[in-house]
Length: 420
Image (cartoon, rainbow, N blue to C red; front, side, top):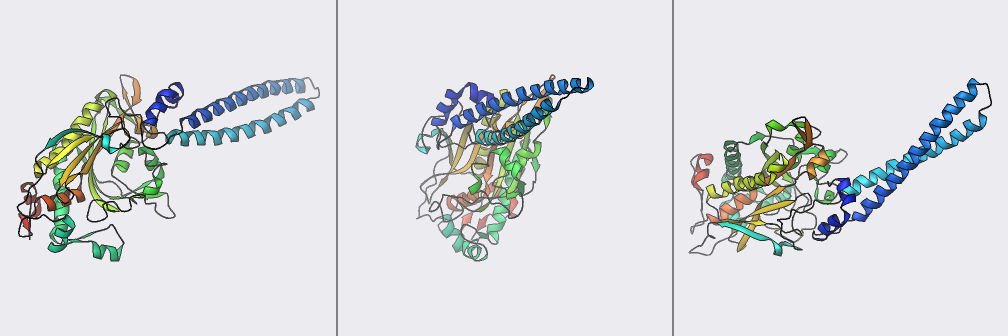
């Protein structure tokens, strides 16, 4: 979340930044609640000081064996008023924290300003879109014909937007995840395997709550949520900690299943593996010093790109506009892989710098030379496994209906180089 002092001292700057983002954000509510908080605090502190003074007078009168009933009655009345003000203060502070958490991050100066994805800026491309001498098929048709993707059975056992992977389809999904983890391990990331459920505090910490609760799967009668991304458990690993500044940066990679309700996405990418309620992902998470975070964003993005390069998949990198970027992010690069059935590039990774926005929520600091400060946090998909599976099926399909396995994955497939 944004620093309260920064919001109050730079209200117009914050309002201007919010005007460039999608949605409506009530900065004035934060200012009003903070003003009321200060007003109540002033009254309470004055009344408590007066109570202390009267208490001293009562003690003096009692010592002198004089009547103190009037002052005692007045002090009881003040105590009742102080109690009411303390209760109001607690309510105002809770509302203020919620209002403060409902304000998204301020976009970095290098982010293109625009209302939606049409204002995204292309940064670079790798490879050329795949060309075929035959009519290419969509990955869901390829998967069905090869018997490796089965959404029909998934719909029977669960519902829409789930898929059962069968045979070499299941092996391909597993091979891709293992290949990604090995690639990131070699690049210096520490692998972790976190829980697939997190508590409410963790969801608040990374910014999924309060704004995106409708997109989350809450576990009934518990304080838990199914993870929407490994970003949540991994970033919260250091919640409430003071890290050794000399040991930074910390790099983590994690494989998890991810669970998203996809509220409001009806009719979008409903077929295939692109928009599922459950999908697999390898996530990259970084903790670093503020002065290094934008260099770390560039290297994070390059590390996610390296997976696509090794697989031989064409892609492009775009910098998201202020109206298209995520709630907690200060700057985001999307990596988009070429999908023949769509005739366009489709997002396969988002790499973001949150600066100190998440760290302030989670109270993650570092200490160096006797001074403490908030860390900067970053994360990115390295990559979404299901979308990578879809991209391989579409880009490596052959005229006879088979699918060639990218060379980098053959060892992970036990030497199998083709699904047919």
